[in-house]
Image 1 (cartoon, rainbow, N blue to C red):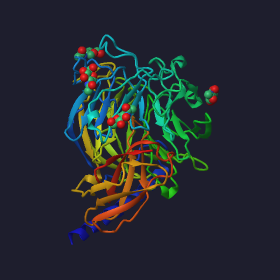
Image 2: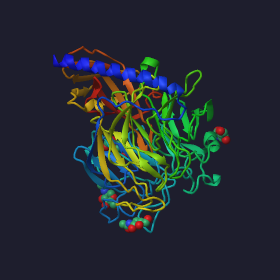
Image 3: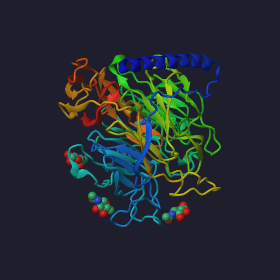
Image 4: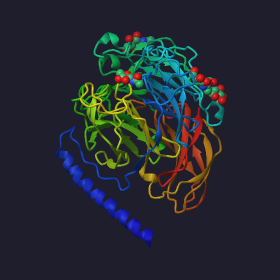
Length: 562
Ligand SMILES: *[C@@H]1O[C@H](CO)[C@@H](O)[C@H](O)[C@H]1NC(C)=O
Ligand SMILES: *[C@@H]1O[C@H](CO)[C@@H](O)[C@H](O)[C@H]1NC(C)=O
Ligand SMILES: *[C@@H]1O[C@H](CO)[C@@H](O)[C@H](O)[C@H]1NC(C)=O
Ligand SMILES: *[C@@H]1O[C@H](CO)[C@@H](O)[C@H](O)[C@H]1NC(C)=O
């Protein structure tokens, strides 16, 4: 009886939401392109909660195969952790199971680096900035650095081990580079500044790419990339997504293309995305929507937010464009967030929705250049029609501006960390400073519990995979688990979180895997799951398998995909 009443209520709520949507879509016909569009409140908004301290400012972050999160920062004159040698730690390993953190040592300044997982499972951080010997003489020049970190789901002896830098270097200096692991396990590394100075001076820019081999060693050649040359000064930290034909989607400024790496050529120049600038120093966020066999793994990319110029007075853009870059005639479908937003970032969630968090309503990237922090989570449902996809989740109380991150954990919650929008850590606001010190260095670690884990949601349990080593060649594997009572639809998700920094989630992707054997309503489930057909769809490296029932994920498990 209670259940029936709840279902009836839910149907009513959905019906009302649809009516609101109809009214909204009638409204939006008349509204100009980049004006905000209100998003209805999500029925379950999710919950933000502070759980710990990050130890170091969380400029870059990634979930490792040991279930822990690595934070990576630049050289600072203060962090919360000192290494045994007496110097501050600028990297740390955070254990979400205990909310404790330990310092890690690195050899070169990782300030605004890019990165990726290698096919062998190691995480690499690429490029960075000059040493600051007067602060820390033990840390060297990071401009051409390649830093390696090895963590394992099966070998706990690696936990807490430092970054390794055997001396391999990038072929050219790269500060603000983007990296994408390719289907063959090589790594495409693009863009960056040569010396950390003004990107409006062309001589400072490195509008090239280079390729690392599967061991993360550079070919030693930097190759000009026209889209980066053309779009200076808005060419750093490009958005890059691997497409299912093996080509790359590359986006900087307002400009997008499909690029073939092997042929070193632009395959398709896409139309410009209407609106403001979308990449550094007015970045928005970019996400490759969940992939599935239903449409032959066809990619669709959504880019939201941005801004007009690099100053604290810059307006921010509420609009989002989505595009299918490999379709016959790719065009941007436009929709809007409830307000303008810069430094907003998208994280895929295992129920197939996308969560957008962090950022500001005014200003830009840079020290002291942002104000009017945007605190609410926006939930984006790509299964709905464009224009009806956003709903509003709950709000944090913590500003997450320049140098903040968000990423999904094994338990299906979202970690939200960082914000260090000042040159060196400031712990309490100092009013009336230029650049602004109204917003300070933020060490608090928050967990956002998404809607699907609210209301005592029942997770699938006892997940056992037939192998932790999977091949992207259409081969099957078996997943055994207990489904919660009254389960409806259970799915298997293959998830890669990637390298998170500056609102980019490099290499981030998620696939719904085909499966058979599901027995409706049964507790014991044995599914035969089909791996994706090739590495264009899933580049090699570590992934998490989430089994979801009714969108509620089991605790994820790391696998290696080759
Ligand atoms: C990383 O650690 C794993 C597990 O101990 C080991 O098998 C592998 O060889 C290591 N990788 C490198 C490149 O050292
Ligand atoms: C990491 O580096 C620090 C500082 O050099 C050193 O004291 C520590 O022993 C290293 N940790 C490990 C696990 O090797
Ligand atoms: C790649 O293409 C660019 C033009 O976009 C050209 O300048 C460069 O010489 C080419 N490099 C190689 C190695 O083919
Ligand atoms: C760090 O440097 C800033 C100047 O950038 C200074 O105001 C602050 O006092 C320094 N903090 C420490 C702990 O030395």
